[in-house]
Amino acid sequence: MEASKLQPLRITAGWHVEWNLFYEVNPSEKNMTYLDSSSLLHLNNHQLKRAINLDFRPENDVKGYFYLRVINLTKVEKPKTKSFDYVDDWENLYYEFTSKNRLEIVEEIERLVIQIPPFKN
Image: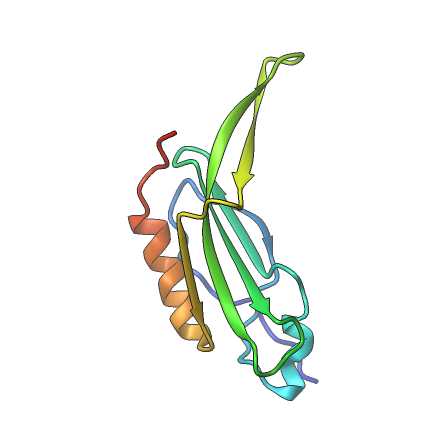
């Protein structure tokens, strides 16, 4: 199997990549090893209080699809250190999008990082 490159993405300022296993491959029998992670990509933006997560579901299934979610983040103070953490609210998603088309997912991620409004809680 030929080694694949990470999928190029245009990500705007303020977004941080927590992890990126999103490769420039389309689902096929020979490429499923690139789609066997529970999460392919996770971005967060603490200023907007949003995170973007990309999965492939079901994992390792050539008939699967990309599942893109925008998660609201809540800023929580840690009393002992007076520092802050951001907690993901996976139960109340801001947005969900699915597609079997990798390039459609790329387009949607690039649209979201530009247009997503801040979460107000």
